Amino acid sequence: MKEIPQISEAEHEVMKVVWKYEPISTPEIVEKVSQKIDWKPNTIQTMLVRLVRKKVLQTEKEGRAFIYTSLVKESEYVEQKSKLFLKQFFDGTLNSMVLNFIENDQLSKEDIDELKSILSERDKKKGEK
Image 1 (tube, helix red, strand yellow):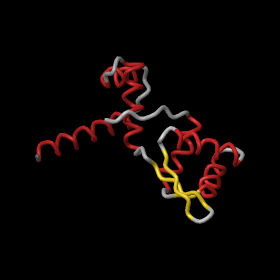
Image 2 (image 1 turned 180 degrees about the vertical axis):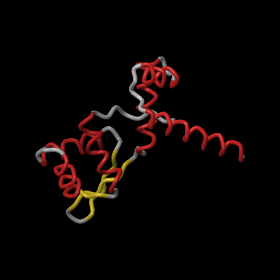
Image 3 (image 1 turned 90 degrees about the vertical axis):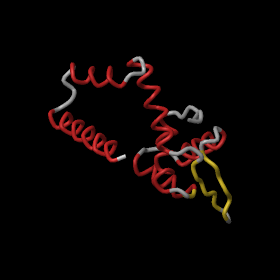
Image 4 (image 1 turned 30 degrees about the horizontal axis):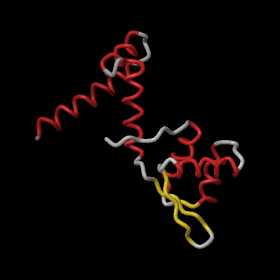
């Protein structure tokens, strides 16, 4: 897996919009982010400049507008952040994390049933191969 640059929480909010709607122009990004977060357009544009500088986004001028597309897939970002989270808090093991949630009663019966269903489906798919 390629190394993904560090993305702040604020930058991640902008990236979620880009991932969902790309290719997307600056005004569209400003509009969609502003619907969720009370940021000034200049703040959002600063985030875009940072993300381009970090090589997370690329931009192309189309007429008078800049169009943004991602250079990092959302799935790659989520995978890297998930691994980092596991490493930081649970010695890199998923079992430790799940056990922590179970021991602290943070999983409802519905959550546990859903996990069982996911695991069962995965076993069936592996059996088909």
